[in-house]
Length: 191
Image (cartoon, rainbow, N blue to C red):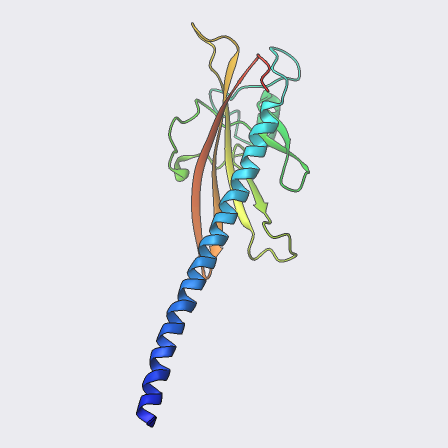
């Protein structure tokens, strides 16, 4: 073999290996994105299940509903005074207060920038891999609505809607994703 043939073979092999490496890196990025999406979705589903487990009653310690308008100046104390809060466990199993967003719940995924940034926006850092570094953590922002659906043909039924956004640090940039979960809670016990 001549030196020219060896050089041509090295160049071709380098190009093939670079393509394989690029494919592996893209595959890893997609897998990590799926893991983060599933983790955040599971966390939000946990919040929904905690809210659904609150006693449905008309008075006392019960499943409250979202206020029609933002209480006071939109501070945590204003929501607590109005009674439009839910206490749940966060991703680290610590008690956290969720202030219910004002007004009716959205029926389709809203533009995140249109949602309030007052105390009704719950922000939490989500550590996916449980290592000491927070450089790869996701930031979860959520808004919770509980609206009474009782009407002519419906009795004692509430909708629970959570709109959420999470961020992912991907290389040198931050990516934003958003989604929404909804469920119904009635006074009739369900299994």
